[in-house]
Length: 470
Image 1 (tube, rainbow, N blue to C red):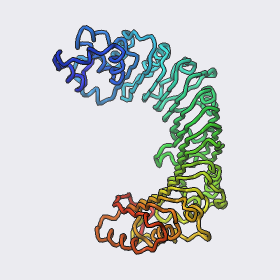
Image 2: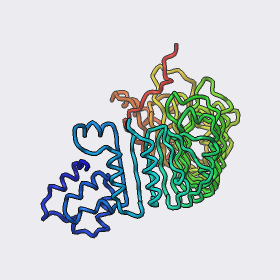
Image 3: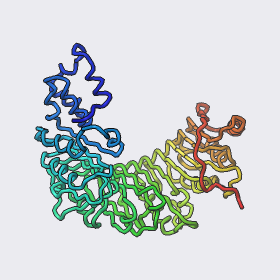
């Protein structure tokens, strides 16, 4: 019926004297089988009489088919993938399915079969449904959107995610939609608003056809949100899409933006961890979008951990509304930037009075790279340094350049609570490393004697903007 995997075939070769698994209670065996692909579970039926019917009672089903699998079984008399799935579903006696996973990404993916199998899973009160399919003709059954048992729904594939007018998912807590196509903005909003206990939401925008959609996420129960766009130049068009987030219980948020023209985020007091990754293109930057990003960051004054990636730091230097918000609760700040793009770092430090850990990652600069000064000493010593709050700094991409030495020197001079500075460089030559170390060790320090400086070689990719001047 199915070929056994290497682990199952090895177990089948063992002698009966070593068969300790069969002595376990049925509930334990079913639990073990739940971690295997269904094709391997079926193979266990030949182990003994007791095992003959186990596979028909498992409530976790996982089916995978790829073009590579077809090549492996070419010439065998094994069933086709649809035949195998149909046979298992027909003979499975489990009244309630705990999990149903389907991965069908080869050229033979059939929309009719997918619809039928999902329908069967819903009829059997499935709790966890994971679909990874690749067929634009797929239309998921309407009863999926009125399931009273579904707790997790993960869907990936370029197909129309058609949401009916009537949606009710009273137990859905986890929703992941990756690359699916939405019929309209209203259908997306209807889906989110019909999940009263939704806690975790993952959305990956599927590209060009999403560039005009209004993503309105309004949820009174949502706790984590991960939303990103395709990381491909083909999708980095200037979209007209809008993003609105209103989640009063939100605790963790990741936003990656390429296409949204406008976004509005209502940041509740419960929001403590945020990761932002915005990549603005064009030179000069769109001042309007720079201001949007700055205003968004200003609303995050309650967060405890903040990570800024992409071109955000560079965008802050272009903004017409300088940083003025004080982040009283922020204790961890993680900044990523390109070569020559961190001129606003000193002003950022003025806004984080309680900062304890600063992680700074900079793309490597060429020796001939031409850019303005990146570090300028703040007019007033940041409180995070003078009040002994800041204890640890990690600087990845450190090359011992003038601005970098200046920043480290300033921290060592005024950081009365510093305990550790970790410098990582992409320099490969031992002589160059030694020169950097000499520069660092020559910096006078007012920090406690217990403050330690670590230097670890760490190769980083070169920044694409670092080119010799013309």
